[in-house]
Amino acid sequence: MQPQIRSLISDKLRQKISHANNVLVMTGAGVSAESGVPTFRGGGNTTVWKGLPFEVISSAGMLERDLPAVWEWFNYRRGLLAALKPNPAHEAIARWQKLFSDFTLVTQNIDGLHQAAGSRNVVELHGNIWRARCFDCGSRHDVRELKFDNSVPVCFDCGGNLRPDVVLFGEMLPAGAFETAAMKAQTCELCFVVGTSAVVYPAASIPEIARAAGAYLVEVNPEATPLSRLCDELLTGKAGEILPRLER
Ligand code: OAD
Image 1 (cartoon, protein in one colour):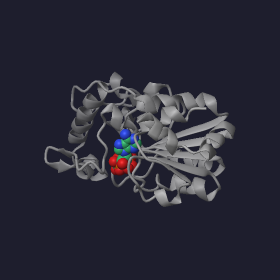
Image 2 (cartoon, rainbow, N blue to C red):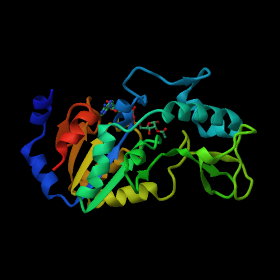
Image 3 (cartoon, rainbow, N blue to C red):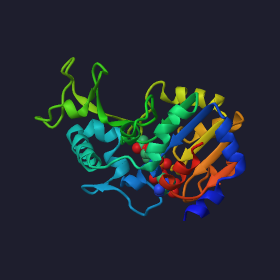
């Protein structure tokens, strides 16, 4: 296995890694797959909660109709995530923040595994399942500190109802997250896109912006995606096996 992966990594990429100062990594569900987090697409494993498809229970409409059900669903998901640990891909990415003078990690994942591996200043495009946000005053709280006595936790600051601090279907991205990611994409020299099907916008436009601005674009994924044709290099395989072998 190892020699085969090694042969996939070109000398050109090794040189780029050695010389780059400004690097951006964007991740999707696939980076957490080896930790045991199910991906959204490609596995034939459509998530359903109490007969409701993922895009219904995780939607802005459901938040309006049945906030307790949304909390129940997110509590269930957090319960599954609580036992999971970062894998070698998260750990490699966390080390990279020290290797490059300007390093940005952008993720679509809400699982918090990058932070658990030691990554800091992660640009979270879709929020974080371990945070709650107040409908009324907007303040954010660590879900692990909340009381769930009445199925919907309330804000410590103003007493308003809290919601999961994640982007639901039909909602905008959190203010500033996409803008920060896009700005960094415009200036990076090397951009890795890891474990995303690259079909959900605007997240999928981040690597497109990087490539258009002249970055060397590398995809790490066992499968081809719509982005593959734009990439300078495709590293076909599992992130947990490939990323640790890329370190300079
Ligand atoms: P997807 O489930 O769409 O895609 C996962 C990708 O990971 C696929 O391209 C797989 O081939 C790849 N993959 C699987 N195992 C891998 C491994 N071990 N190493 C590397 N890659 C692997 O997940 P996302 O692209 O993250 O949004 O989905 C984007 C968004 O769609 C999510 O953030 C979520 C969903 O709707 C919201 O919930 C707002």
